[in-house]
Length: 280
Ligand SMILES: Nc1ncnc2c1ncn2[C@@H]1O[C@H](COP(=O)(O)OP(=O)(O)OP(=O)(O)O)[C@@H](O)[C@H]1O
Ligand SMILES: [Mg+2]
Image (cartoon, rainbow, N blue to C red; front, side, top):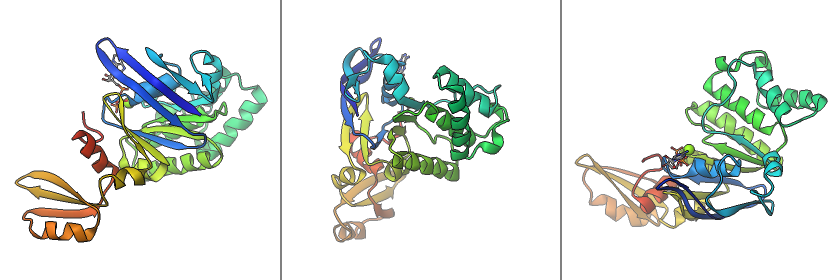
């Protein structure tokens, strides 16, 4: 469905994406995790055709995106990292504008806008200026807008950043429903729970390179099942074990504060990079 083949993107001396290869299957929910500046947004921008790679190719349903720009744009819906609604236009007008830009015929446009407002629970806010919506509602409006031209691939760049837990879950539910209806979803996130809750497969990216790839379960199993966090003299250290029985004797001889918990994707990332997902 989506294939990155040895994609490299440089900004002067900085290599934002480095020889990146990845295939995403149709109807998959794929999550890309990585620290600030890792290259996630650059990859999303390449998929939206906003940015061109310096080398390598991107295939969308087997077709080279650089040769089929217009077609590719129609197949892709995107919710960018930063809010990019027109604040002075109403909720409805924001959707109307997008529909016109994508040449959705008038009758269909009205019908789809009404259906998407309903889907994203925004019907009651249709006449309000986008600027007055809360952060969560703005994200939902951006999602509705991304879906208006009926894309087959949905790109979500940190779709729930800054949202409260309920608003975040609300977006997750919408993403699940869309995927159930057949949409392929490619998302980036700093939230480990988000990747674990939504994604069938996860890629870890660091300094423009894909450093791990697999289901959340597979990635975690590589380091173990049980994590022991040890706080001693103000310093946290992490230790991993394949089961609780193995962890117990280790924990018993420790002083300081000890936490025993299940391994998560953050641990995998830290093991591979020595830093946390959101860290520079
Ligand atoms: N237009 C640009 N000009 C110069 N450098 C850029 C440009 N866009 C991105 N970069 C650089 O490329 C690198 C990758 O940036 P990118 O936005 O893809 O990271 P990211 O993984 O999305 O980070 P974040 O989690 O902070 O959103 C960064 O070092 C960034 O500063
Ligand atoms: Mg980004």
